[in-house]
Length: 316
Image (cartoon, rainbow, N blue to C red):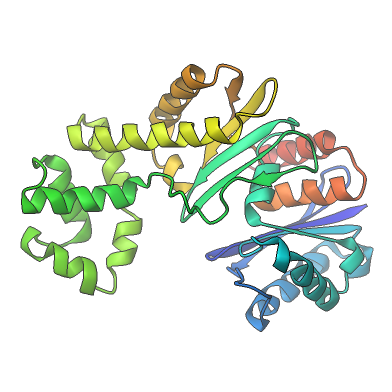
């Protein structure tokens, strides 16, 4: 049996083709293909060639693929999902062999082979998802309406407060200004008028973490608040699950905090939720999608997951 797993968001689309023993036969990567509502031509311009490239690399025909699982940003609402699935399955010629879910769910499938697991992932956006049983994966807040604490946004706001006198200045202020390449008196105008400001704001997390490691009090408060909210989210999301559960904290922002942040999260999790075990994310989302594809085709998830994890470790 042969499976394809795809993960697609706003920034990138990644795909893997593997067999039922977890042997990876092809990998591809391209630009993002997230959708809003129904899939458009831009989505198909990315995904159709990607599937073709995967099959060409593996020297198999698309009709040989047993199942395809796609995790796609924009698959959020039940009233849209049936039509999204129909249109994508029809266009790709795999309607009966297609599983289409939110991209957060394939990220969850990459966390652990454990049946009970959860994920709090903070990168360009927030992913929160959990499951109690295989095949019953649930997105907790797919569009982050409740707004998980974002230390990047907090650092920018606190810098502005330090400039205008609403907060006592610390070294974090000068670090953020240096990162943004702007003088204090011009910060507000830069924030609203500089086209590149959004990119600088999105990339400020390493600045905050560096100041935190240097014991800056403002950075320490920001990181502590972020860690507390990540753990609170995990705790609330899994409150109704009986028994032990594995919980992972991942994504680019959290990864930039390094081992120190993971240790802080692990300690807070152990205190807040003793039945939970912190675990690193084992597989990238596209590999998680491949495990989901295998599950939908009737395979037990654990052997395929573990074989993909070993293949990934060997490739490193």
